[in-house]
Length: 272
Picture (cartoon, rainbow, N blue to C red):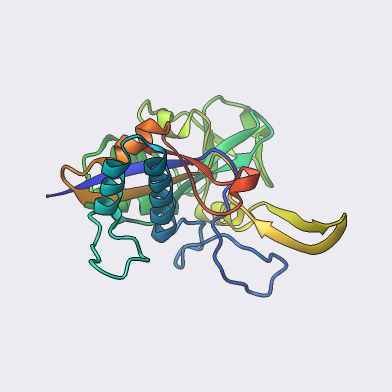
């Protein structure tokens, strides 16, 4: 029997999961984006590869090496380099759907911003496999709020609150004890157009390669800022709960994407 686990991914540090594509823009290395919504995403192959690498590394360092390596092979399948006795894994990974992005604010540093389109994407994913999940109901309540204007939840700061280039956001007294552990108390519900503007203008940094103090290569790199939230799921055979056991042992932290040596890609996986 198949079991489906849902995870909320919180980016602890900046995240760059590269698209591997260029469009002749000033940004040399862009992040992965959903082909339909254009929002940042994490492809399933990237999540699978990162978790497999982390679990394999742990197995090699463990006193219980043989058993943990067997668990990795059962979950993910045979080593791609193996020439014989290829075995398909029992885990199925899915893309990380964007749920919320941090947006700088004139009050409280930042708010976690989402929009109806992102909520609908995540609700659709949850409804397919867990229609009565408490998080599904909480996201539905958030989706049912006013959609025609951008607004913020939490403490009322009046009409002078600014989020990035957005001003005059209305305050909404909506509260949910279910959603607070996942998105916190400072939530901004933007219109789709306003959120599209925020998601389309992710931070960009200049990276440089120096040789004897001389610049040899300058490039510009886009990244998803820390504290973003993605929703993903993993389908597995009943009785193969290796991933959740691994996450407990590593305090639920996995490194995704590039630039691990400069602290990028640290993500917390929280089972919902």
